[in-house]
Length: 100
Image (cartoon, rainbow, N blue to C red):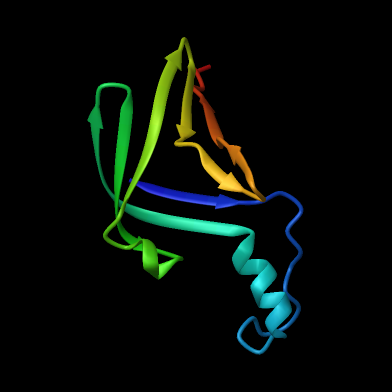
């Protein structure tokens, strides 16, 4: 499996991304995530085992997502995470595209 997620409203880096100022590179890094690996399904969970990642410290770890399907929609929810002192759940929603 592979996951690539970019936040909306990301600004392009002008010129060479390696030579860009640290704050510009930090913003680009903070608004983009990508990882890939294997997965397994257990009851209402899909577990991604991270083999490669934009965040090297996640390699070898598992990312647990709760899934639910409703017709042509598939929902993946994170476990509750604390961000800015508040518990939050992040949800991805996919919609199946039917053939025309």
